[in-house]
Length: 512
Image 1: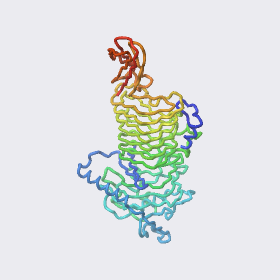
Image 2: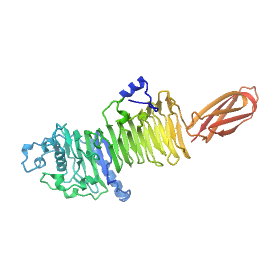
Image 3: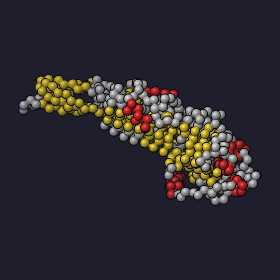
Image 4: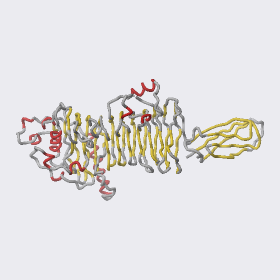
């Protein structure tokens, strides 16, 4: 059930509209190319400037060229590998001819989800790593050549996280099915674990379990500060069964997507939620967890729907872009937050063309924050939260706010702000909510020598007016009265003239 800020039920029309509506962990970089989630994972020991400028740019050009080749690549025809073609002592890999497509049912995986398929799936992944090198994607990252782990549209029960064999490789796809956590799945685990410690702690015997092939020595360690490149997760449904986390999942209990220690993470065209719902869920007040937790820099979240979680997006790294994000997770009235920017003094985040549906945005000590062209429904608002009293380089413009006429301000402050500079809140429209801005216009009419315009109902910050511009128009014959700005305090402007007369005063003020 959706509530407004004060927890009261919204009107039926609003409700119907909404119903339509550590350890060395590294998980990073999802980007979308022709419907492919490309995961580039880097460790938290990565250092900027490790390579000289020239080799770095050469590597980036090579990666861009490789990315372009993926876009133009034709679909790979799938040649099933029959289990009958392999001997009892060999893995299906040894008899594979043609495209390197690894069908998990040939490894004993159960597509009905009745029995545990963890070992079979890990065998298929391990075999995909046992291919001749196709060169290097970048220094220390071997190109596997694009092998595919085909889940064949099955529903697979797993009791442990699926893990890649070793760091130092890339260009691999897992696609086409459902992974579901068993009841004894680790509560702190992830369905697909790409962290470096996940493979470092596993022995070769644990990884292979039944395959006669030995690990390629090039893949047992990585000389790069990166661990993986272009790991593609496509057309997957990941159900954590409320046991842990995963990527693009339902039923998580901690984080849906966790990015820790990496950067340049692209998450696109995804639906994330703790519970399956289309809104108006009776259990909404009990939602927990975070759908997307970004603990790295330079991330982009685009065209993503977050339908149930306590927090939609938590960002504690700078230089992020959120576009086309629809948050209708736990409503503000129940204590939920759509987007939480938790990096006081170094926000550097842009939120554009997004839809905050009964749940709002919180920014701690925002510095370089841009919010525009977004829609806030159901008394959803923006909260600027003071940690050290800093608000600098904040732009909130051209947004729409729709509420329930309960006196909710579109932008609110928590705590005092003492360092305010370059803050622009203007050109927003509101229906059923109170406009707040840093730029305001007012007028007063009367027959006196003193006129006061009070901007407190509109201005965002208390007792702060940095610039004033006014004009006085009098209907008194042909005389030219003298007038002046006499006082600016407590967000009020006083204009006085040398004599009483009928006149209109028009005033514009700015807190920026």
